[in-house]
Image (cartoon, rainbow, N blue to C red; front, side, top):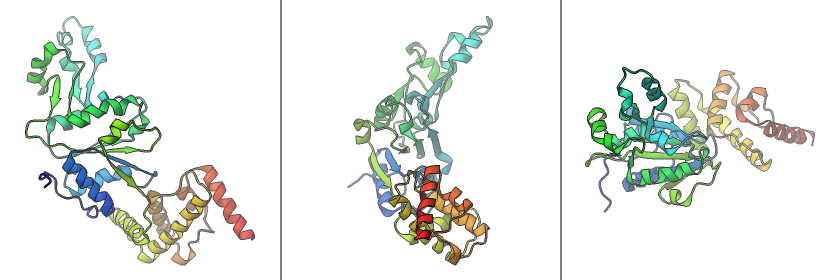
Length: 313
């Protein structure tokens, strides 16, 4: 029997503005039980980043949600702690400032470091891990496996002093009865992630929903969350046309197919423009429709050419 979890079950359908599939919810719950990170991939706009917020919302952990966006220059250490060497250098210019004689006053824990040390239920999002150098996931590997790390910049001779003054020492870990946070890591597959890193994660692939009713539910949840009332007739019509637009886009080999985020925005604008359900057509997309649905010029031109070609047949 699996050990009891300090977290409640994630159902995937209790967030105000997000709807996860049963398969996604099951993988999340397994990852929580196993204490494994969750690697989330999928096309842009399908809710990879928002999944973390939905988990935190449903489990009552929004106050404990920590989001870290990875950059091309990011190092794993940046998520754990920060050593302010510049401020120490500036303080050292003052002969009356003895603080700069030590390193520990200039070290602070960063979000993941705080989450590890706290040992409390929470949700940690490491967004777009594939943007960083390949060393980033490799260096993060051991940390996520053991949920502890060393502050390499802190001299061993200052360990006890730092612990007394800052509440953490050179080795940072959760308290003995601590709880691991739920860790989600998103990737756009800009780079191939190392296999040892992949082995330690549970994998979630967020596909575009193929069920029109589920899409309509996603749209309704998002619009209700922003206090907008849109008729179900308009929503269902927009969803049907949107699926046809995506089908055409796939046939045309578009670089960026419109996803759920574009659909929600499109329905919102259709509502604002007071467009009638029967007037929405994949063959008659105005400038505003194209600006919302398509994000790449070549994709717009391909779709226009397809529409014009069909109109001329």
